[in-house]
Image 1 (cartoon, rainbow, N blue to C red):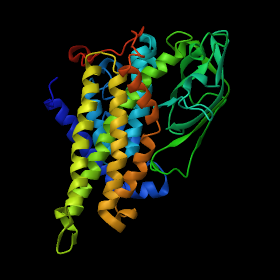
Image 2 (cartoon, helix red, strand yellow; image 1 turned 180 degrees about the horizontal axis):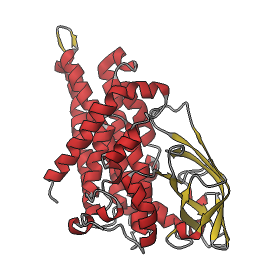
Image 3 (tube, rainbow, N blue to C red; image 1 turned 90 degrees about the horizontal axis):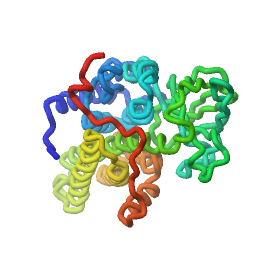
Length: 404
C-alpha cells in the first residue's frame, strides 16, 4: 500500500477544503442555531462534482477513486458533520449501492442524475422499532403485477425532506427460514403518491442538516426499480452499510483533526499561571492523544479505501475504521471543550458543536456496539465473508474516466 497521495488526491483535498472552509464555515454556526440546512449547500456540492466524486464518468460522476471519497469526507466534516452526512447517504448508501447492484438500465436511468446532483438520494432503512436489528423490519412490499405496493414507516432518515430518490428495503417474502431472507431493496421516487415525509427537530447534534421520517401508504413502485433479486435486500443493505460506514469513518477523522487544531490554537493563546496552557503537561497529554488518534483513524480509513479500490470485501476494515474514528472523535471533541474551559461550553466556539455532532456517529450507520460484535466475530472465526453475487467494482482509472 502506497500512503503517498497522488496529485489528483491533493487536488480533491484542496477543492473540498476550500469549499467547506470558505463557503460553509462562515454560515454554519447560524445554520446550526436555526436547525436548517443552508439552501446553497446541495446545489453547490453538485456543481463542484462532490456528490458523484467516486462514480464513473460514464454514469455522470467524476471518475475518481474511493480514497478521493474518503479525503472529501474528511475535509467536509472538519468544518461540519452535516456536510459529510450528505456524502454518506447520497453517495455512499444510494449511489454506490446502485453502482454495485443496479442493472445497466438502472444505472443509466437512476444513477446518472444522482451522480450529477440533478437528483438527491437517501437511504431509508431504520424504522421506529428496528435499527440494529435490521432483519426484523416491518415495512412491507406486496407484488401487484409489474409493481410492488409499499407500506410502512422509516425513521431517522437523513435528507428525508431533501431527497428525490431513496434506497428502501422492505419485507416482500414472509415464509422464509430466516427473517433476513425475506427482504428486498428498491429505489423509490419520493415524489410518488402515498409518500409522506417530515422533518425531525430538537436533535442533540447535526442540527444544520436534514433528518426526518418517511411514510409509505400504498406506494406503487415499478418492479424495474428493484435492486438485485427479490429476497436479496439484506445483503444489499449490508453492502450499502460498508459504503456508508467508510464515509462516516473518514468524516470522523476530520472531526478529530478539527478538534485538535482548535485545541492547539487555543492552548497557544490562552495563558494561566504566567504561561500558555499548552506548556502544562496535562494539556499536552490531551493534545498528544488527539494527535495519535487522528493518525490511527486516518490510516484505518485509508486502508479500507485501498481495499475498495482493489474491489476487495472490506466489511471488517470499514467496521474497524468506523468504530475507532467515531469513538475517538467524540473523545477528542470532549477534551477540546475541557481545554477551552468555560468558553468551550458556549456555541461561540466550534468545539461545542463538534461534541454534539460527534455523539450521533457512535449510533448511526450501525452502533459501535454492533461494530464491536463484528470485530469479535471475525477474530473468533465465527464470521467469514462469502462472495456476493455483485461485488463493488474496483477502481479502474481507464474505465472510470472513460466517457460514455
